[in-house]
Length: 258
Image (cartoon, rainbow, N blue to C red; front, side):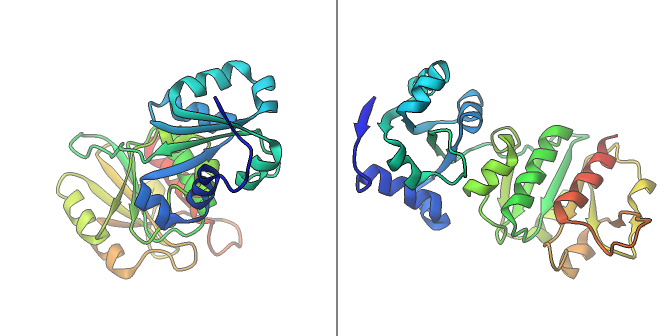
């Protein structure tokens, strides 16, 4: 491992830019994950590690994991805690960061009896990460994002997903209405709406199925609701008008697989 002793080092500056700028992540085909759990999930899922950076404290506390990460990375560096603080996006950093090549784990839509979730214009990274985590836990076959969703490779999404970003296939679609129309030829699509939909408990989800979840503030667009096979609503007994987008997704996704 090589030592980096300056915050002005070009490698540190490059990683800082990857952390802060979605456009730069897309241009470079790289993203950054921080923390022992996420970095370990990355290598064990077969992701390509371009760069591994850790502090001396991390080497002492987690020698086996650091050795595993170093062996998997194309290049590895040791930095001081002060330099690491420039990169860290967490309150209590563990001193471990990986620069990872953009993933190529798109869903396969030619299989039968699979479940998918489509997210339209989801803007909160924590919500997107939570949906990925639920999809992972419930065995969904893939997540489809519209092009106006927040960046799936943002550090906040990666952290909220708890490593699910490495395990759940995902893709970004250019035109969600066209995508759903094509999906309907071999499956059934459901649009999550706040009111006037059929209760989610009224359906048998045995066939290939897709649930569409909308923007946190505005829900799904009318055009997308129209092309879905069924509008569905979560029955609620309390006084809340609606649910958080990630919470709604989790409830419907669970209903679809139970």
